Length: 387
Image (cartoon, rainbow, N blue to C red; front, side):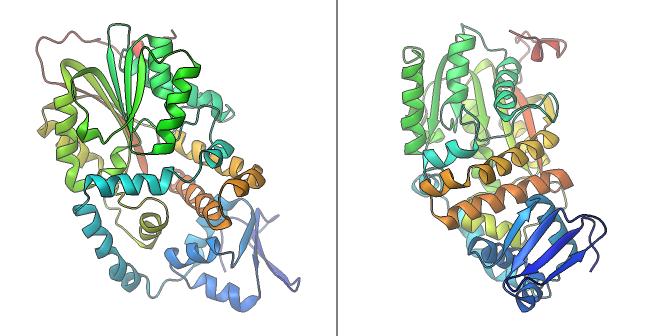
């Protein structure tokens, strides 16, 4: 059985077989050899179910284990398995109402704030960090990401700032506290909203910033700067036009909009792993292609000022989250049930593998309305200048 990474399979009876050359980087623990044979024949969806239900364990490099499994498993029924389950989710994404969107967001984010604190950084930033080098801590890398966004938007005291899908409020607090902007964040997660409100009050920012439980389509008014970080993945490809049109309505004619989101490379198709994520992790989610986002943005009246691919940064981010999940397993299991813990462990390890292998990309797009009156920076140095 060929494998790029050496690994070992162990049964409950103590039998072991090593594959590949060198010291095993991970150990797969199964009930017996029949269970191992069955595992190698499963598609990604059913292999994921087997893991989260505790039918086997992986000790060591879980990201490497996922990559190795992809190389060696056989999926004779993969096409039929995917074909039979995906239509339901395509219909769900096409018909997504505001109520359904809120229910989908709460499914993922309202698990437990304590659970997310166990593996995220100290500011609870649940999106791609921005690393100076691979050894940087996740706390410092997430703080750097917040500043990177604020600098790209050229935020200042004269700005009104809107954060779409604001999470637990870290970017709203940073924009108001360090850049003196007047900030509004919106989320569909009750637990995120409550934590964000507490954060703003604790930092004495409630007079300059607020977070509301609101669908982005229901926000009113205009803003000089808008950010959407990790939210476009929940919109759906068919609603990209509406999404960018709403952003255009909310943006001041001379403003800037930063869209930060995961995309699929061209040629990548939905598969059993996609179904696992849509059913078990992110119901209603759908990853667009970069060209689809650019086209939708331009049709809404935007021009693209800057595009940055952060794929290596998200690989490092997901690796860090997996390590923290494993290191803080006891605290996680006090907050959520074992199946939820194992689901997140698998999903984040799989995401790390996808970003490392180029199966997923993530882009920051800086957009503005086409205008001859707008005065813009001629060079990009301002994005990296320290405050």
